Image (cartoon, rainbow, N blue to C red; front, side, top):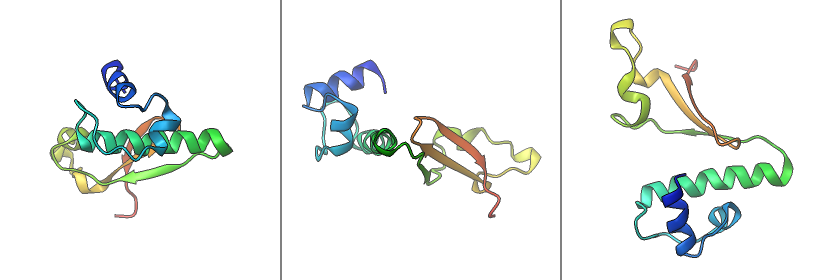
Length: 101
C-alpha cells in the first residue's frame, strides 16, 4: 500500500489495518473499487494471522494482461494458464507453477 492510499483510507475513516479488514466502506475517493477490495482482502489475511498465528493463503484468479501474466515466455512453452497467484497473510504475493494442470 502506498502512502497516498493510506492517507486516503485514513481520510475516509479507515486508519488501521484492522479497521480496513473490518470496514464496510465500499468507496474511498481516489481509490479504485477493485484496488480497495484487494487491500481489504489482504488486510483480513494479515489481521487473522496476528490473531491466531496461522498463515493463510488465497489463490487469486489470473487476469490476462495484468500483473505477471504478460511476462511469461511462450517460446519455452509456459502459458499463463499453468501459473497460480497466491496472496498470503505475510503480505507477500507469489507466482508459482500450478501442478494440478
